[in-house]
Amino acid sequence: MAHWERSITIEATPARVWTVMSDVARWPEWTASIRSVEEVTPPGLGDGGTAVVDAVGAPRSKYTVTRWEPGHGFDWETKVRGVRTIGGHWVEPAGEGRSRVTLAIDVKGLAGTLFRPLLSRTMNRNLGMEAEGLKRRSEEAA
Image: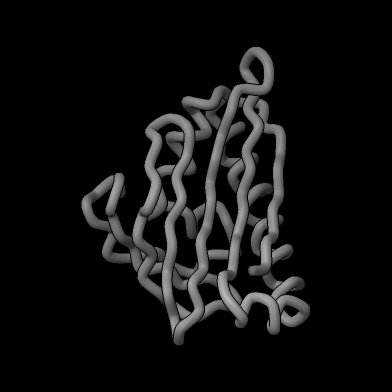
């Protein structure tokens, strides 16, 4: 398995960050790492929900929510060409009016191990863009 992770402190409450982070249909508005998010079902996502995501450097794929904790975070996963990818999006309090967000990507199986050197640049870049974009959007209305 290959694992990438990025954490960031945001000057906004966890509730505000959750509102932005959980509205996956709007991600292309605030992160350049996502070209589009379509077919979000049910609207607002939720446990077992799905969305078709077109991310920079990755094949367009359908993600399914495997863990959903409203106000705290979610994990979702996809399987494309036999490669299982899991994305984690979690927020926690970091002092009054502040949040700590942790974003993670895991690529399971032999593909993750073999292709880690090739994937690292894209994964780190995308996690960075997502973290910074989430920070900007969450702090806009904070």
